Amino acid sequence: MDEFISWETLATFAGCAAVTGLVTQFTKKLFPKFPTQWLSYIIAVVIMGLATIFTAGFSWPTIALIPINAIIVSTSANGSYSAMKQMIDKKKSKSDNQQK
Image 1 (cartoon, rainbow, N blue to C red):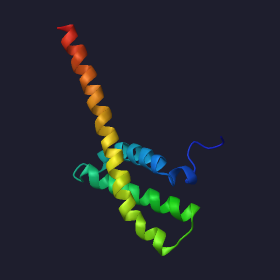
Image 2: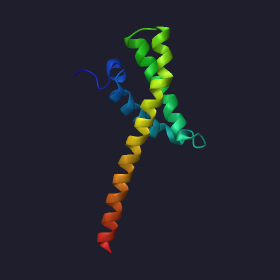
Image 3: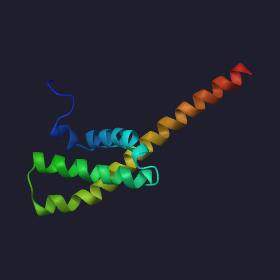
Image 4: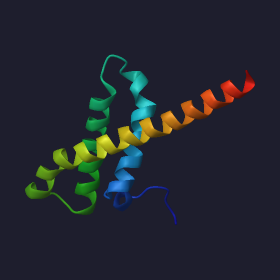
């Protein structure tokens, strides 16, 4: 494997959701007043748009589906982050309770 991420990887649901989550977490502090869920959606639209154009080419039917698919990718990325944060918080509270 020559690349960490390729356009083909970003064109998949899992690849786009993973990168959307990572980019959102790294950029949300740049826009503190902007809701994170909307930032995640915008990032998903951009990533999916570029991945679609670079892999499948530009066609109106394909481009028209990007905003709808971005909703699914964005909510998946947000949900994954929330689940991971809950697990970390649970572990942290367990260790705090054991130390008492």
